[in-house]
Length: 290
Ligand SMILES: Nc1nc2c(ncn2[C@@H]2O[C@H](COP(=O)(O)OP(=O)(O)OP(=O)(O)O)[C@@H](O)[C@H]2O)c(=O)[nH]1
Ligand SMILES: [Mg+2]
Image 1 (cartoon, rainbow, N blue to C red):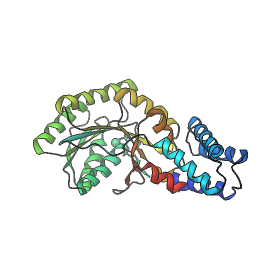
Image 2: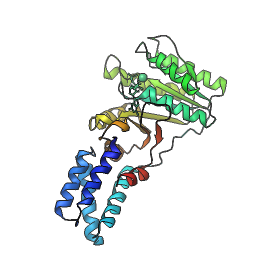
Image 3: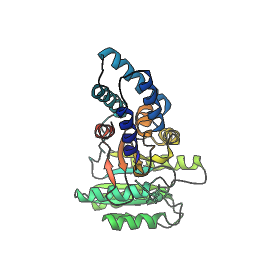
């Protein structure tokens, strides 16, 4: 059972014992939201807002309180437009994040979706740190029907990206999806590498539509927020891909990140298959749970 199912079950239980929006109810709600990994601050704030609204609008019955809670949570998540900006040819999407979060898998899934929309897509294997990384991306490129630019293990990631961008321009590719290493010799190296890749895109494709997506594993819970802050500083994020939402009760981190960093969750990974990537729509998610 994934996050949203679990949260749904918890909130359903909460509301099934609802008699009135009294102190006991608010306390239980607070606990529920913290358990779902909304983060202490966000949970407290959401409950505080609900309290104020219940008081001000004199909400009594369960449906009214539920609707108010829904609105408040949607407000917390909705940062801005969650659509990817892929408006130029080529446009470039950089996938970053610590190792094992699902960068390569998410590239495969997104590539597949873009192909189905008739776009020409090229994968760039700029994770040259790990021997099998480019092989793994190659397998995904075949599955998804996307092109691939790769080099040998240990190659300069910047050189691979440079090649990929030249190929994209020469072949009229619509979207370049660039994989990156999740781990280098140390964190400073990793961050320096990412900002270098970003500069190469600026230089080779000035004016191109760009996205820098932080891939986050929802099961990491609050630790995800710390990661997000570090990558935000190093690379400047335009969005988050939240993966493994199918296997965790901790997806509440979505709300904490959106609120604290102002970075929208744009895509949600809900499994290991080609089709298991969804656009993230705050309202429909919240409506599904509460
Ligand atoms: N259940 C589930 N598993 C996922 C999801 N996304 C990725 N995975 C799995 O997570 C594992 C790691 O995924 P990768 O795509 O290799 O992660 P990565 O970020 O590229 O990792 P590195 O290349 O080591 O930095 C794989 O076993 C994937 O199948 C998801 O949305 N749900
Ligand atoms: Mg990878």
